[in-house]
Length: 354
Image (cartoon, rainbow, N blue to C red; front, side, top):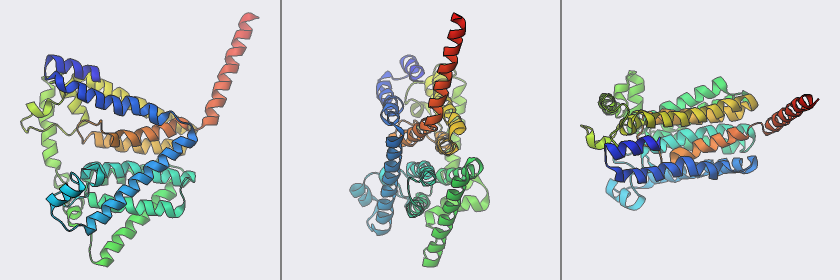
């Protein structure tokens, strides 16, 4: 992937941006896997618990600030950071963007189901985590995050075992309880959620969903450029320069194809295929771990079709954690398989010598 981006940057675009982007991608998808996956099963699960705790704590702080801060948008940006609360009153929290915050929540929710099913967190801990994450998800008013979360629940019900189905039902009950509390309190759902998400659900039209039309225009514009840059792209971060809208296409696959050519796209697809192979292999050994990996990876793939470059650590960490758990799944089975193969090899060698 990086090779395709380098060649395109050298021959078509500005090569000065490639080292920066290459370091970012290398940190997220080459260094972090060693840091996260290089632990035993106990410490990997402890990392998962701390990850979930960190996301829940971030959303709790975000919710408290959302309902207590009375300053203007510029005051919020000065005191709290870039888009902690956006100009349209959406919750970005420490992710600095409402859509990114929604993605973080969508990829953290499967960890609640998994850790609860595995006994890593108790009933009340799972219920509180679910309530806070769902409430924060509503405040983000992210159409992509809301849709992805719904798909995650459905996927858990389909592929998950009994423990996962119970967790999914807990989430549905927690969602209903939050909506009921909002209605009884007289606040109702946040106006920005009703405008961006509820309107699209009621009308059944994606054109009513947030910035859908603007993003589709960027995708159509990028698709036209693919024909001119099939094998050699325009170079790293040059899509925003050559685009008529002066903005990069919010689709990871088209962005790589336009900026790095087909070779860069093929590299990214190979990475995703490797992750999917790990997840599918885990199903045979431990269905709970496989369901976690599949739902987190599915969420990531959905967001990759609606986002530009994905080298931020908030994208990589939940995926790598889920893959690490999937690789640890059925440790006893892997040892037995290795011993069986060793015995088979020893028998073949003995027969050959005989």
